[in-house]
Length: 440
Image (cartoon, rainbow, N blue to C red; front, side, top):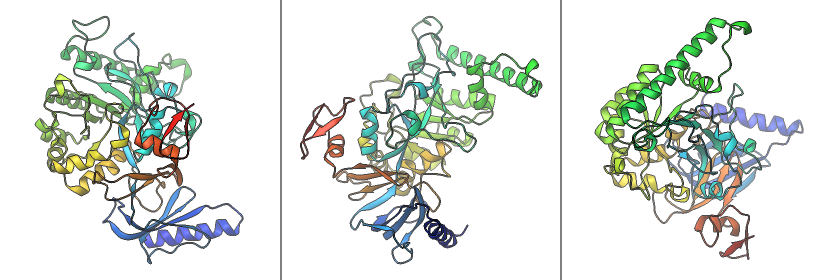
């Protein structure tokens, strides 16, 4: 639908809702420099939001502000889409245990603390959507969960519902040293070759399980016994669940490509420290790469050849590149620095900002809802004090679905953004009215 027509259509809906007595909360953010990602920056723009959705975005004067809208003047500020973190561990999730190296039935849905301070730190960093994962100490450590960082009391308040009723999430897999145990301790592999062999065994079982279900054709008497682990792997085989694959070394990356082509699923490659060595292979496979730029504390031998230029090399080869924090590895509050460092290492500016937003949305399969400022999308955006690539710029506000979840001018939020005594612990913050504060 043409943008202007869509704007008029949405405006008509607002007027209709108001006339019928329905509550339509409309805000117009005016005079900001808007970086929509979907198009060129708008030097003096207007963003109109109604009930959590974007209904119009464009140059001031070209966008009609509905009557009764609350107007917020953002002169001197920059507005861009909320950041999408494609690989995070906020909320203190815990996945698989030591009983097996492959545990697809485990759901981090059952192990996320929505009151964790790490979630508030992510909001302070401008992150509005995050792929929360279990760790990488297993070949498969469980099901990930895609979260909108709304304010909420339970995990149900943050989860994303898909159109078919499923809860949005992927599957976390890993190869390399993290999932290897010396000489193969217990059920865990002792070599890279054994790691791949165990993964193959499970996917072969999943193919057989899927075949039995299909042959049963709904006949309960012919159905195999329900297997939660196999159900999750079948969702991967059927393209309903994305595999997010922790991999560093060039040979490990190629192993992931081989396995994905063998069983017909499309993973997202995470970390790819040596991705610059096999950029053409990744591009040929048509896979997305989620890169960690600020890797601290690091110290992993297989990441020794990690380069700041990896994103630029992958982009030049034709790979869709995104970024992630791996929080706590990188503090969510400095996530936006990833774009600046990548640009310094050769990634074009527009690609770097795309990597922070739209690329992550594509990796989660949520690009129809978020990742850019366009009519009809969720009103997830951030207000910055200046240019997003400047080290002097602060995230001043974070909005998720039209609701403000972080405001640097609020003392409690400022404390979360700037640190201070007790900031990292999961407790309710209190302040004395200035920039300092404690906790109770």
